[in-house]
Image (tube, rainbow, N blue to C red; front, top):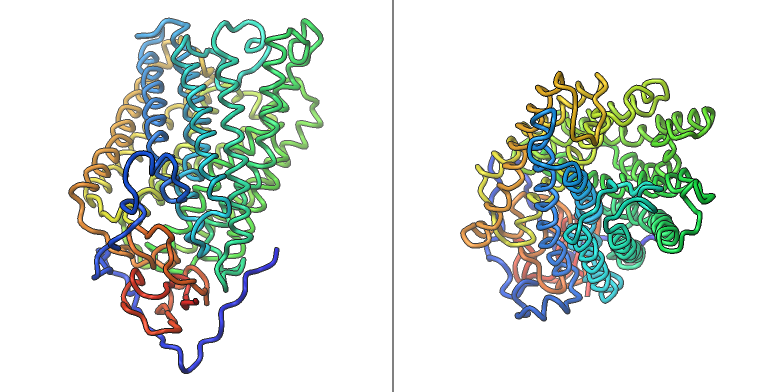
Length: 591
């Protein structure tokens, strides 16, 4: 890893501007000159200009629209499942419909939303800007990644609409390879195709971080979101081919009857589980690592402090990416693997919790004695820390052999997974969306409605899944449409919470959309944040930077007034949208 060239020293002839980042209760509009006259949204017109664009920012928006639709579809499927569980004998769905509904919920949310949402939207939009580049390393490959992902998603949606899918999101054989009469092949093809998009996106991000960094942007000055995206990209490249192999073998057995997984014809169903979880547990970190990266950016801004333990947080992302490949067997403690192998996986599961705990402790230390302001992004961050911590701690019970025997395949597992992935990933996504929305659109949203949405989501989520820890502890198995009557109270509470939670998730769709038409101009830096992305116009210009930025210090210098060195006389000195160079990390302009 060859670091980028260091910035030139500031000489007496260099003009230095002092900008005071004194925390304020309400973030001001700092861009007095207004948004750039030409930005990535208006520099080209017509739908073809979007479908053929190679601008990484427009490609991020191309991900945003269908991902929002998929999320709402997955949420509707979850709502049907929860409504059906209001009564012990099923309220609205037949058995086959129930199986298809919970399969649709799981597959859409995981493969079509949680995995691609932050890498596809925020990763595409902000990684090049954060490293001081004008675009991704391979812009055309970036557009191809979107088309591949969208094409695979269409196969997946077609499988769900034309007859549905009833295998569960794990596709376990021999049911999926022999007995299910639903669209397993169509769905598998969708998974196979979207996997290529993950690999291509990962390659592009890694190449961008290595080759496109601005002068002075050393590895020790990278924003922690970039570190998280880099680690995520490594997982995408190494783990996704294993899932493609598993799906290909499943299709081979289903079409040609070759005994690969079906034990009646000489196959081994445990082989599929090993292949599936070798991808799917690292995929947990494909989902959560980008969210952790977002938390770093938001928590430093709204506590007005440098991140506590930059190196520890950065390298913990790498540690998670490495150790995450070694723990897949804890999903299979009761599947027939050896007791001693299970003990090894149990110990490794304890180990993978360490880098995640490092992050949580460092976030709390960053908050300590910070000048915290409770804007909507910060409320989502606080929700993330609370919910993700609960999810992580309850995961330890599932990683211990003795307790997992009792808790395996119960509602306890559902609650743990959702606290980690939804309480973690979804709240991080909402934090990032609300934090970067002014930069992406140039508009501010309603402060009242955004804060209310954060509270509604937190209350609804907690009411949905906390009762499931109780029912799971008492032995209620998951996936069944029927259950003993003594568990009905917990199911009613979960359904009530899911209703509140759904309202919370729909609220941003309305007020964020309304902000596009009625919101006030955000300015270049409405949060008074550091980082290169906050020193250019909102929305950014097509090529991000008019001049080459030269980075002179780290990304989170909130403790001291930021110093901006400009090698030439700027046209404007407030925000860098029309002047020479720009600086969140402490930057000089180069030519």
